[in-house]
Length: 305
Ligand SMILES: [Zn+2]
Ligand SMILES: [Zn+2]
Image (cartoon, rainbow, N blue to C red; front, side, top):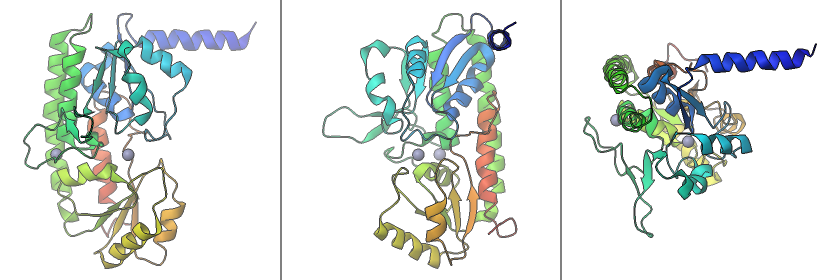
């Protein structure tokens, strides 16, 4: 008997059994978008994410099998050309017309590369600016708007039960708003603590919850920053009140360890890509909570230096 073949067959059967035969086939670029699809559609869609654990959407290169998955997908969700640059050219092609939803887009006009957000035209107490920072999914209200866009697209797919998706979205909104209130309250002791982030992914979360973000280590997460920028950040760290540096698992720790040498800096790791969050309809809310938990590690009584 060929053990490897039967193991393979078994695995395949299990994979098929996970979803109903009619489950729509959805592809997302990054895990947080997968979590939003799950919040809206539960198990009525089969969703797969392109950027695998440990990789960064800023510099990913797709495998041929992933390209085929995109070609076969009924709906594709990605943040947009400023974020997953590796998808820009492919998804701009006409073969994907009508199947792709980007949550940010380059505005019309050749010489104007400012972004405009679908998801930014709301009013929840603070201004989201002109949308220059593409890490929009870390802001819970922008994520809610993304969930609404996902809902709007998914209900157009065949075999989708609109009432079910409506109910899911309503429940998500309610749960997310409750989680947001709890998180806001829990973050109150962070007042006056000076936060630093590895790259701009943390900015929208900080802005939404009115945290004090005093510095961002690198504007391009793929590159080590220049000497002058490092010197500026070191200066800010020296002057900061109880500085805490929020690092990310996708990027190398070596160089930021060395620039903080001799300084009294607390470290905490948060994951903007929700790598360890289970892909369920509650996943996005757990992701929000996981960011808050990481920030709370910055409190002096929690801190590990
Ligand atoms: Zn990023
Ligand atoms: Zn916000």
